[in-house]
Length: 192
Length: 195
Image 1 (cartoon, helix red, strand yellow):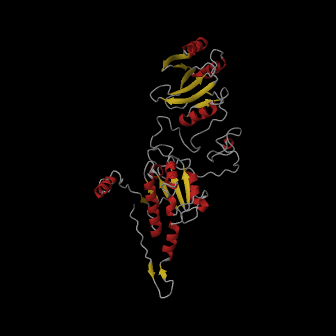
Image 2 (image 1 turned 90 degrees about the vertical axis):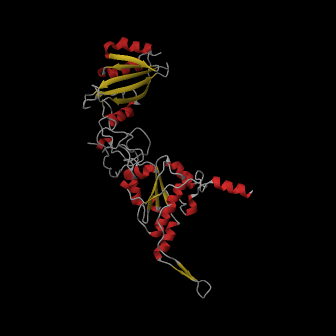
Image 3 (image 1 turned 180 degrees about the vertical axis):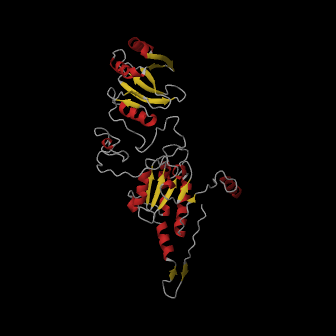
């Protein structure tokens, strides 16, 4: 069903679409990481696509490959009912320069999902408004879902953190979330 | 059940008058009072909480043993139930709650995750709450049956009575339904032969 959609993207971006395949009825395209955000914006605004929902954004670590990481985004059009999975491959063997454009200003849902991908895989989303850990605590070292993270490594226990202004606590930002929360993150302005 | 046995002696002597008297030790009396009036603080984080609800509800009825009243302030409670998985991120909170409890205080690790981390052998889980707080009784099981929890509580009561500080583990016991020697099969046979 979405094969037409793949053709639309190919027609617009040409060789930036590196490959495409379909599995279990879901179309997948692999794009060049430099075009990551342009493809996303095109899929959102193009009338034939109308991908107005970013369902999921995550990453996969393939340590034997070069580039090592695959960033995966799942798009859904609520009007047209079609889906598309878009991937981009980034990062060298050490996982240092794993960088890709942030989609947080296109879809609000990308904000926390990109923070999760940063937390678990250490992928740096350029232009993200508030890129910090979302699941692990700030003292945590490394990125636990990378394949070279030692499986039996146990990090030291963290001390109890006193928080003065208890009304609006991170991990929620100033404008999001509930009026109460957990005392596990320092304010984003106080980091570094 | 565990091996902890009461060591103090209480003797009852009947005197000449109407009342009579009993001699005992002050520690034995206070331990006796403490073990039948445990105010508990349930620190419930995971699926073991379902079994905790079961064991505190009327069918298994934890309040038979004096551990009736849950106190949702650690300052008013004696017994900390750690029910479920403790993550590295929760560890300082659990430690703070333990520190807020006034002595005498006891800790029960409810379930395998609280006892040793269980199968969560990973970067985010604390491998047993004894890494954070001292633990008195371990109740293994995933989750433990309510009978095992009752065993654990009785084990703790024995420990309180004897003043023991050694950690104790609830041992598995035979299921009377499947056990041939003590089971229902034998009871049914006996009933049949009586008829």
